Image 1 (cartoon, each protein chain N blue to C red):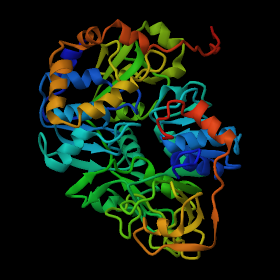
Image 2: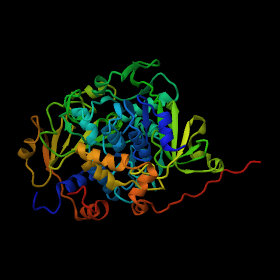
Image 3: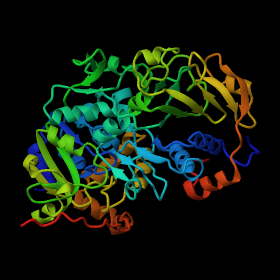
Length: 256
Length: 300
């Protein structure tokens, strides 16, 4: 992708933003999801309300917040509330359409590890833990993941399952009575994946310009499943790039 | 009461302590005073331990940590806590881990003196295997199972806020977090405020009162006491410091040098603010943005 007029991160931000077309409520995380959601609101989802787990509904941040508890998220929002209300009435109450998550490890059924590498009792790397991820994974009507593709992250077996995706595939998620619809999209720097097959296994659906199936497969720790037709992700448009570079990430902290 | 006296009187070795505040209102002044007074064997409780507990754990005040997300918000890992958990530096740290909603539920049950709090979480997660206090019970009204978490009642809680009167009637606006729940759950509540106001200021706007003086043990007037965290409308989050801490905290000796200079090396929060300097503080002041007044009516 060296000679393309956009970075891999800009491709990820744009692809994630487009997937929010027509969405009304999104649970936003920091970093790339935050830029993607703000881009979506300016393009494909003008009615999108940004919800932050710190207890903010309908945020309109005037600057890119470094953290999900930034004061710029409070000023000008529709509502600030206690975290009991946020998790109880909004998330558990079924009001969130899309939740964005990422993690150190994901498996073929979209289960996530954000807790520990190696063992829980003796971690080689102690990761942040759940935060709200476990509840978002259970309750959001749809889950989108944003993660860079790598063999260390896309693993056959998680070291710890923090947040449930489709568990062991098939109907194992539904048998546990989870209200949310589970993962639907994985946005990476090289390709897009969905879980629309009958077993809810991760499937390659679209390659970003300049990437091949072989390259993508080589970064995945299991034998990759492909959709019957693998498309090419449309490159970011000039207007999308302008919005990211001028308005959303002028210092280039996230897009480079 | 001064922060020195509040800590000396109410934070004894071995107590369980919550300094809450979700990104906002984190009372660094209390954390630093506890480090200065060299408390030991504390159980530290916070949803997001943040940089304040990273510093306290590096200083060796804690034996145990109860939490739901270990991160330097928007920046990366909490390096000191990672050193303690992965390698026992400066000492091994016991951990007790929940999800965010699990911690919210624990405080809520603690506040209302309930035996447990039910929530739809943890199904399909390995967290209950890692923490046997997370359990599932069958609903008495049907066949379904829900997760339950036990109440959490810290011995002491510090709540930072914009303003309170002398009795501790405390008003907060911005991110409310779990401040109300943790205050009602704790045995002793110490409120730390940017401004001490007359009771009439509180009475003029009762909807903004989050914590009643009824449950407050002590009020500490400590301007700038939440820096590098923030207080909505008073000063902004010092994001540059959060980024800088990521570098300092990667090395235990650099961390100790920082603690020596900025915690042990200053007498109190006023000394810390003087050391930062008026320009740094001025830079963090937001442009005012006032809400319209509301009419409560006067009913004689």
